[in-house]
Image (tube, rainbow, N blue to C red):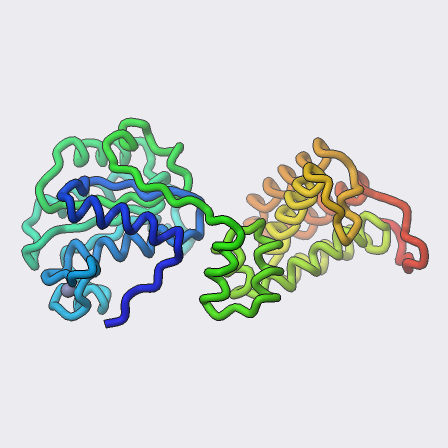
Length: 336
Ligand SMILES: [Zn+2]
């Protein structure tokens, strides 16, 4: 049986969980929280498998061989339930977990576990429970039943009502130090130069760095960054850049642009020289205002007809706010 490979920051949470389990102190409701992309759901899944396995191994993991483990691996164990954001009629995800989902969950918890050992429910993202759903969940939390486990996963736990948080055993994931993050990427087979570039772009966040490497957005980020510099230098027009971005993943480009702006701000704060010279731009209020504006435009990009216009306006604002003299020798293609 191959054991799941946990990164160091997952392992420390797992060790806490296992310690609680072995000592009989594991709560009926757990809240796994911490920044996105640190592998919270993986650890919750591992705990769920361990709780449902009928013959857990001596090393604290699920055995991987019993009927429960076989059903879990196949993705249809009757005593595991996952609650999350469901699709609306138009195929997009709802933004909230509704009360009907919580009522269904509490009815399910009232059933006898089919394989006899326990029932485990995963709720993610738990911070998206709407008010009535949270109230319904609270009732379930107030009447804990033996062998029923609720695993709440959230990257924004402050959005959960305090009444829910206080009834959960809390396990927090912490972003690792840079060396630890780098070691995890290298252990995952990422070449050192790529790991360093991705970690620099992701501000040391290993999960984000991995995502950048997997979806190819590291290269795209370089392009977005160069385009913002060219716009500020007057080498690129806002309208033509908007037309280009509209054609290809506008939302991702805008997210990367916002990321770059955050990075400029951070480098300015630390007085770190920026190779593209962009840290010499503007001031914090201007950067922060543009960052907010970019995020608002991102939220509105769902209306495709206005996409190009909104992008053009946003990029023109960048050009106006951060315009600087054309560097000596640079080609001028006209001002935006
Ligand atoms: Zn098993």
